[in-house]
Length: 447
Image 1 (spheres, rainbow, N blue to C red):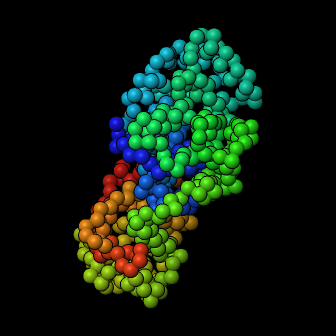
Image 2: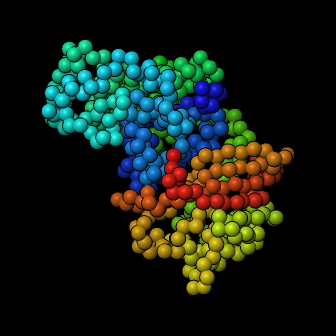
């Protein structure tokens, strides 16, 4: 049994991806990154994040390379026909789906309906046959498909979603049945999530998630008619109709159901310290934080210890004083919107939060990231251990990517591993005593 299935989670969030966790109309992905920060600080220490998508693993990784998704604890792909934990398929689920499944026969039946157009090869999976259906009367074709599959003695499920996607699955498979399978594993092992499960969706292939007994549901504001109709027919105080699209609606629902951890475990404050520093660095790099010398120096003096040391991924070593001097002199030249511009000279080591990006080329100066692009930063894969009383070693991946409307910027994403020593002060305040960065290969800079 995978480690993630060996501990009882406080809470489980199960979310669809396209148009639910990912709002493709939000060019800067600000709503998704707000969710990321909330999840990292208030949920990740004791809860499970599950992505449940119609996408194949290949298309999931394409999406994760383009938008700022966190690494999920469990990935359910291909409309519930594949369950992956740490990239490994759940063999027990695969064996369960194999029973009574005749893929070739089902595909042969669908071939007799010319309105069905086979989707790309990556979306054809061992337990999923996928088509596009673009007609004015889809129910006519869907009815014929279902009746012909039944007449052939095939035990299948036909799912229609998004106004054009048709999937033929084994009757044992769906997003909801995959979730039920996972919950049974928890029930027979460490125990069901203490605070409950919340599912999130926008389309017809999410209906079965909402139908799993006992779950709470978030229907995002941009949901399709097929999910809206189902939720209207099954009204309940456990189903929340969000007023915001995509991840904004998910955050709305989390607060509506009061799922954020009321205990505020000790780790939350350390995670908040990391996220606060990352948020300041992002705002500074985009010219939206005060960039006068006094404000910058005050921030560094407040957040970093007197004996702080910073080791950049290039090997450059800085004290707190040197870091402050860098920010208030050459550092501003590296950032779009910076209030100071360097007048030439040698290239300085990048500051924490810039990850060695060539910001001097200028996202604000019409570089290939786009003149209107904003550099986004987010934190993922946080871990920690205590070194001594009030002293913690923390580690996380920090990712960087410029986002702009109409631009695909996956090839401009960079990332680094950061290891820091945090020292606790009065109350729940933490300051950086040490920070060491190392680069992450581009192919690993994604969920």
